Image (cartoon, rainbow, N blue to C red; front, side, top):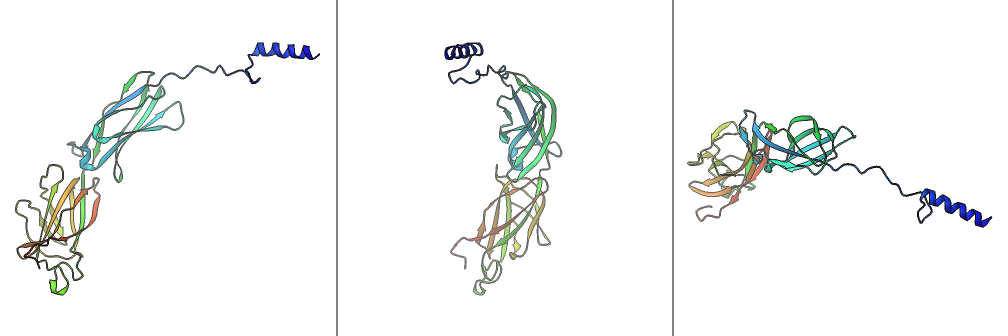
Amino acid sequence: MTCLRAALLSAICVGLGCGDGGGFPADAGGEAPPPGGTLSLTWSLTDTNGNPILCDQVGGVTVTALLHNRAFQGGTTEVFSCNTGAGTTPPQPPGIYDIQFELTGVTGLITTAPSQLGIEVKSLQNSVVAPLAFAVNAVGGLSLTIDAQKAGGNCASVASGGAGITAMTITLQHLNGGACEPATLMIGTTPYTIDCTTPVETPCFEATTTVTAANLPSDSYQIHVRGKQNAAICYINDDSIRVPPNGTTLQRALNLSATGAATCI
């Protein structure tokens, strides 16, 4: 009986292909999924008037493609550096895709480009997506305060604990290239037009007075603030600032530093 049982088991294993562990046969499995295909995309940025702009001007950092293969739930994302202007995805499963596109900056989503639907990805092939156009409202605003960090304020005499500033000048230059931005600021309710060649003096004002500007081109700038005691430049600020896009206003407190010039009190 024992010999007969062993013979039967041996015959079954031969028929079913038992492994060494005596379990079920190794899964021959279905066919492996076909190799993936890639997607290539290019993009450009314009302002709302259709003029070309650079990623840096609006703080654009990444372009994201949100890929949805209609054969599956959910989707995947592929992220590219905005400044490159082009990119190619890693291989994706073949199929029909709907794709959304986002332009993102340091503060989050800037804008989107029109979705593209029904894009076919073929095995071992590259599919070229229609060129993307991101239209950005490339203007923003500033709301600044200027503070010499003296207990008596900006304008009071040094003897009274102030900075003793009698006049100020403000200029604004694009960080890339150094071009002057001849904007008109509002110092409180008083207009002030920037002139980088011959900066206009305005009477001293306190840190409680806000300096504002609207509809400035979005970009990175260097602002130059000078606080004078009569003819001597005694306080300065040369901060880098970024005017954001989409009509957003940058709020910033600018602190003045003493120059230590011999003619300053």
